[in-house]
Length: 225
Image 1 (tube, rainbow, N blue to C red):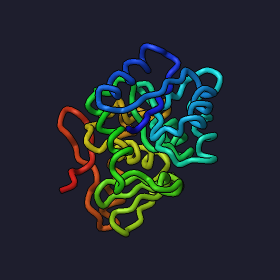
Image 2: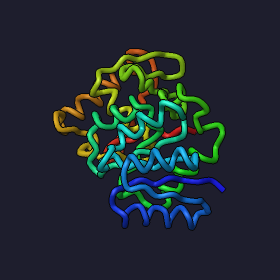
Image 3: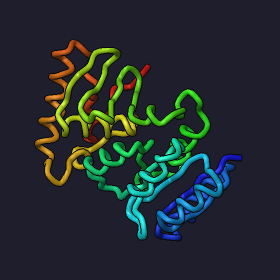
């Protein structure tokens, strides 16, 4: 049976996640801070870690940094609803596997967990693979924080444009509202300008538009057949 380590400084929140995972057939471990995560990780070698970003003693980013020194275990960051793109970029720089929001629906949580612990074709097999996100023919080079690939065609984006694409690829089935794509320094109008610029760059490279407008809801990636 696979073991999931859940770290959150709020006991009620991590217990709720563990209850969902236990009902789905996983063993669980709980930690309330980063130091406990490191101790449990070394003792039990869990198959996946769900890691809150804001924790006492050692935050999620620093905890992931320590883990990545010795292991490529999948690490899913657990964040607030309004996560800054810059925070996600920082997490991916630390080779985080994925991002989850604290209000994620139980079925989606389980789907994301199963994706990384049960699918050998999807689960990264070494640290280098964590630097790339992919969906269909679209690949996002998180290490560069600049380049995306459509098949083998490389397209260079600005930092803000890259952040938008990275967020879309992190949950490709979700329709992201403009407010979810904006950051502290990038308003909704600027988000729309960035999306237009992304589309223009893909068109110039003679690649398909990667972004689909969902009327009344926002933006998502084009569905992969």
